[in-house]
Length: 109
Length: 238
Figure 1 (cartoon, rainbow over the protein chains, first blue to last red):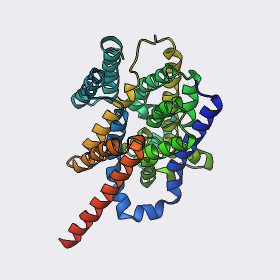
Figure 2 (cartoon, each protein chain N blue to C red):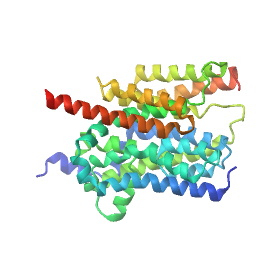
Figure 3 (cartoon, rainbow over the protein chains, first blue to last red):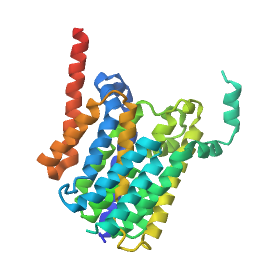
Figure 4 (cartoon, each protein chain N blue to C red):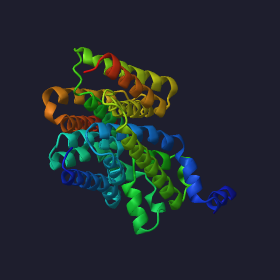
């Protein structure tokens, strides 16, 4: 287990950065709101950021090996469930269950 | 000018109303918290770190990333940078979150601290226009409690899960699948944005594998800025 002092520092840094990003923009709101580019970005950023974070999560999958079966099937299950029912909880729990079952039982690393 | 329904809303205790407002979003945080807590203990951290992480950072997707970073003993600077990159989207929430309705320094401090994707999404709906500051604050507090509670429980139960059970971290991947699908659906016809993002991420993965997030975000934002300039030009030429 990592050193508790290091972990506490990691939590403090993360909390400070996150809170700063949420609180400071309210202070500089007026000039931000006026910028057309910022408005253009703000409507398009969320969709793109989520796609990038998704690719980031999958960065360590080696797509040509058999270890890719579990994430591939689980990914398809999550997408399928979400397109079908549009229920975030169901999609996340369902996809994760598929992944845990496949990774633990059929394709242990 | 107050209508009868305004008064009815005001008469109901804001805490009770806020608990109802949380709805399925709040309930959804519990299984995600369970997965987070279980993943955390499986990564070698003591269960109560789940409580510490979720109480003081309160940025779900980044907390999942932080487990991996902390387990690999990443330098604090790269943790700070990752926190910045993953959470920089929150900057834009200030454009429409109704913070002006929240009164008092401490209340405002907490309200900005707890300004998560879910809190933002719920308090900027049409129905939320009538909510006063207290109701917004209670909503944020309840969402926070659902998340901390789920994660703590997951941390405690996680140590009971045999080590042969692996792959719980996929909960984070599934979370981003859901958030990405919902965000893309909100943009309706705007397919170039997710495609630009996916291209940026894949290029970053191949060219800068050590700095995937930073490279992908820079490529994506750069591409968006170019697009906005081009769109502006074609608009003024038309």
